Image 1 (cartoon, rainbow, N blue to C red):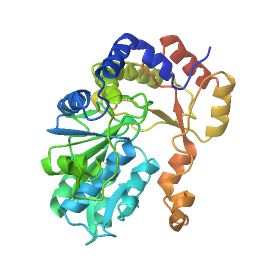
Image 2 (tube, rainbow, N blue to C red; image 1 turned 90 degrees about the horizontal axis):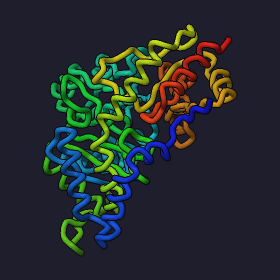
Image 3 (cartoon, rainbow, N blue to C red; image 1 turned 180 degrees about the vertical axis):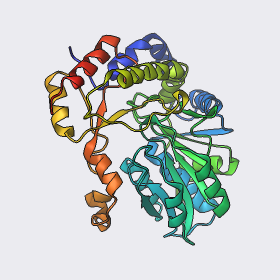
Length: 368
């Protein structure tokens, strides 16, 4: 039995008629940028997340980069100021900090929860610390009150990288609404995915929202008038229309992901397989179902031989990448161990129970 890691074609097929109608509506309108579709999605997404404002941008990296840049301008941060961030993240989180000439301060997460350790955060704070970046990795809510209290006590901004956790909650409140501002990616493979690159920021701060919009429009708030050296980072009308269709089905799709995760949790009995601590039902939307295995590469090959697709998130941590060669000798043992052992199992709202059971049966038959 074939089990793809993720079939975008199957996801699109679920809502094909609605999506075709949305795309046709845009093509017939003759308006392809900064129009009604964009405004409607921004309003709907802000309402869904629970913030006053949502601003669409071209992709998730630029959502991160623009939200940080807006805060740097508004709060008069200097080059070299610091943002504390967990080391076990996708490199985009780190790139956005570096691109703003700020310094990422990398911290190892807790081994079991993958959350930032509040004690480590406090020890890392210096006179140059300006913010803490919280990454809701794998679809898990990594917010907690201790981190929030630390930020408030020390006058730091709390940023959220919500690229992998659309619809995730904590005590009835959605990720993307806890901090000063949050970045969202709508890359096609995300829980809420576009037909190409797309992103957004969410915030309750009107100044941040307005400045992100200006910076992403060449630095212009009025046609041919440029207050900032900006860039072209706008969510196009087709992507906005597609996302608005999928947003209506997001909770339903996330619930299916939770059902699949429950089957994995209950069915996988092979003692070589470990996973992060299990969170409450509302606090994980399972963008990825990661397992950790000492024989990760052998397990991946075994699953491939049985026609089961997997991915590694991520094989090389940011501080070991060539582009950050100045960090290559830094030791972050928890992060490095995570990246050496992580394997992502198939996770999609389109998987059948039979496919999930085949994954479980195959893993349980893996001899190490």
